[in-house]
Image (cartoon, rainbow, N blue to C red; front, side):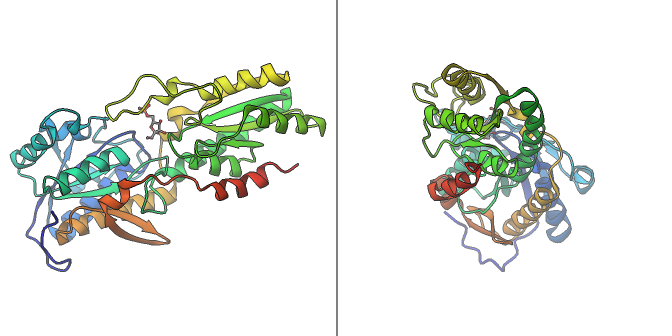
Amino acid sequence: MERAVSRTVRLPAMKVGLLTGGGDCPGLNAVIRGAVRVGSSQFGHEHVGLLRGWRGLLQRDERPLTRDDVAPILTRGGTILGSSRTNPFKSEGGGEECVKAFADLGLDALIAIGGEDTLGVARRLHDELGLNVIGVPKTIDNDLSGTDYTFGFWTAVQIATDAIDRLHTTAESHDRVIVVEVMGRHAGWIALESGLAGGAHVILIPEVHASIDAVCERITKRRERGRGYAIVVVSEGVILEGGSHEGEVDEFGHTLLAKVGVGERLAEEIEEKIGGEARSVVLGHVQRGGTPTAFDRSLATRFGARAAQLVADGNFGRMVALTGDTVSDIPLSDAVSVLKTVPEDVYHRVEAVVAGP
Ligand code: F6P
């Protein structure tokens, strides 16, 4: 139910809500700043922040967002609006309640900044209930379709790479295997890029099955060549033989993988099968914290500016996206219909380098 407004016709000044949902991510504040700066200076929009994701809309919990409010937040990690994994569609009539809250708050448009879950809600609110919603793709996991990159991804990769660099020296000193567990619930992008950049000796991702025996064989071969240590990078979403992802779930039905501990289990299995010492390190939420890299600040700011433009044009139901070096937009439905996972051939090309002597 897209409003029949041409892309070039400007709507009158609007009240625009912004919210950040799901796991936080470096660059969220840069998006907010970009959207508010462009929305207010170029289109005269008024902005409010809805606090803690969809929960803020349901609870009518808003705060003003002026140019002054967003002036100092470009480099700040996290989100000044707070976040949650609240799913309005989990309870009967939750979608309709969002529509009512939107009207109660006097909103004309809403910019939802989030990953597959937050944007899945945004899509339904637009397509099924006619709300004026724009999406901005956020996730360190980089698993949203329709955009080459989500902001926050390269910051997480840099943090993981820095950690791997440090782990090399301690692993080598002690002739140990160190298993580094990185985030990546369904997609192994962080493991792939940080493992490659950090010179890991094995990379394991959820998309491609690799047996524990194959991992042990790689390590044993290294030992035979006189290299006593190894760095194994594993995505949290990898399921090992005999393992499962059953456990506590969030409102969108996702298992809280940090509590499953694939890295720890893998280290134990390696010790048991081939001896020697193995340790595991879970990078966890460190990957989501702190200031975004220059690339992510710039991408997030451009995404925010584009979202403000889409609002001004009345071009709702869209998600901003990066294609090559161009920021454009695509239907929200294209972005959330299928996850962007690592293609097998891409993984094998990287692994061919990783597996070398
Ligand atoms: O969705 C991004 C993500 O970083 C996943 O990789 C991870 O499984 C999840 O968030 C963890 O989120 P939290 O512990 O904050 O619920």
